[in-house]
Length: 181
Image (cartoon, rainbow, N blue to C red; front, top):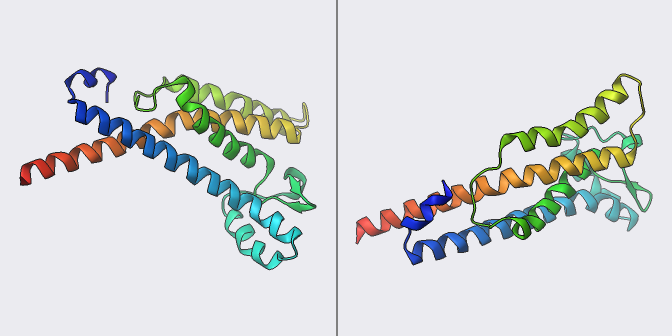
């Protein structure tokens, strides 16, 4: 949806678009907070003496992350459910979503040039490849920071796409309701 479409919208449509955009943004932030909560829950529950609660969550996150202890953060002596790089991606995603309305209109669904998404992958690629080549050993900080850079960049592509889907669906629903009446 090009941003020039706004001049053809009624005030009601503009209001609906802004309202729907804010709702999608809020739901995205909430979903990522819950996801991060699920990552932090296993070490917190294990530290509280309820390690049996953490085992299924570790198992679920094991499908999406290698969970190598030497590459993972620990909280209260217990490993997070994902490695430091994955944790960086998810916290970066949250940071990117939270700050998104500060630098861009929430209802602007025009995507940024893909160049920026690919550029955000360069630090992670360098960190990984230089380690594989034996040139340097990456650290918790380098893995976390490169993951966070990618997470922040991903948020600037995921959120506009989700908002555009929600807006188009709402407009379809409005048209269908108008045809019924």
